[in-house]
Image 1 (cartoon, rainbow, N blue to C red):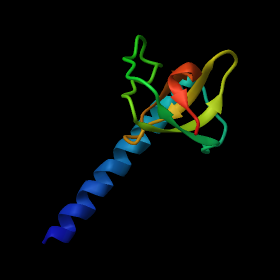
Image 2: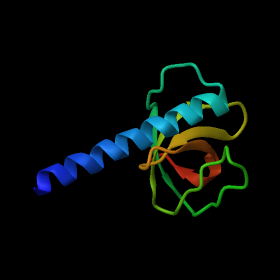
Image 3: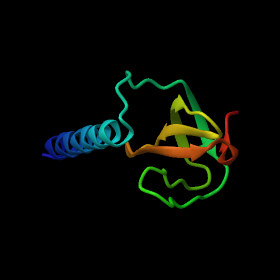
Length: 93
């Protein structure tokens, strides 16, 4: 019985991830393949000021998807949300 519950929650999670990816592609007009170029840890907690910013908490692991002009990178968190994060808030070690 528990097996089905786990399977159901993972399918719900993948649907949420697909929804987040679709939103990301539309909002950022991103048509390249999404691939992780690096991983980073958030140095401090930063709330999002705009919908395109990714809110992060200190110590959170992020996948770096793309490097933008200036001091921002596009990151994805463990929940599948995408957004801009300033490089100064990240530790790449």
